[in-house]
Image 1 (cartoon, rainbow, N blue to C red):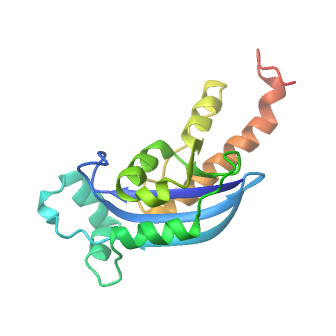
Image 2 (cartoon, helix red, strand yellow):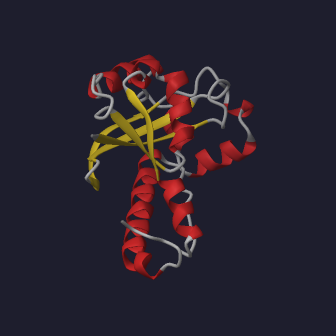
Amino acid sequence: MKLIWLDLEATGLDPVTNQVLEVAVATADLFDPFNLKWTYEAVLPLAPTPVTSLDPFIIDMHTKNGLLSECGTWLTKRREQIDGELEKLFPWIDDKEERHTLAGSSIHFDHAFIRVHFPRFARNLSHRHYDVSALKLYCQSLGMPKFKKAEAHRAKDDILESVQHARECTEWLKRNLSQLPNVHTH
């Protein structure tokens, strides 16, 4: 099974009323989940939405990280173009156990945007998620210290941070699982 490490940046939290600004994708095998192969990156135009209509928090965040500036260049791609390109990269797989599985931090957020903005690509994805946020919560419930987030809010950087956090959780579990009370492995 392929993991699709994906992150997107958007103008807000609602997939129906907000738009996608950036998407990045790296792939990995389920049994080698941290060995990334960079697959896709795209920035979308902000137009026709005026920057001034965005929440001030979003304007500040994406001005500081340069994304709003990139959304105004000729290098952007339209939503329909990205949907088609992702659909070709990740075609339909009949075997539901082998279907492409999204991976990332709070990946359900990204999946909701994909369903609305990239519906052809969405049809080819599994309903399952490899959710790093859930893994971090599980490890924290067992005593692992909380990670500090970099807050880059750029798709590729956020994927790299998610992979790093998943790797650190895995290493922490390997070191500590046998010492944890009431945790049994079979």
